[in-house]
Image 1 (cartoon, rainbow, N blue to C red):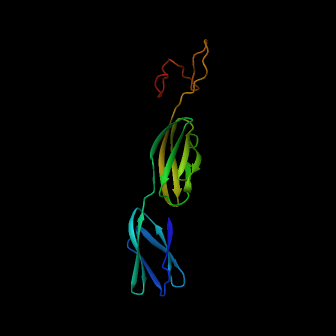
Image 2 (cartoon, rainbow, N blue to C red):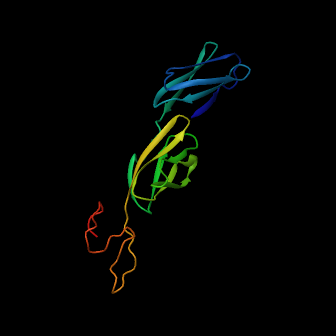
Length: 177
């Protein structure tokens, strides 16, 4: 994220500096006396921005919070949805799925697309990635099989779309019918 700071009523040229270039960098200055500065957050931590005007020093303490997501691993059943929330991204997030046949992004909402709704499509694993510039958040999504039984009649037992029959062992990871 970038922020612009300004010295009001600057009667001399302003010289800007940062106490920690690894946390916050000075991107550019503007104005006839360089009274405006654009700073960019680089990584989690604290820094102080100093504006020197003649012999006077003005300081601004800056805290940069790391980008994060509420879950880095999540399980969801086929056909069901899960909502994931990003924090501290500062700009609009672009969300992608590594395999839309397994986990599909169906909706983004809130400021900067901070919430993403993912639907489990079919059994397997996919990675959901939220990206802003070079910052990436990754969430490993495991989609589990969900049995979808058809209506039962007196002559036909309940049968799942996957071929499993109610009351009999399934013969795959899901367990007993």
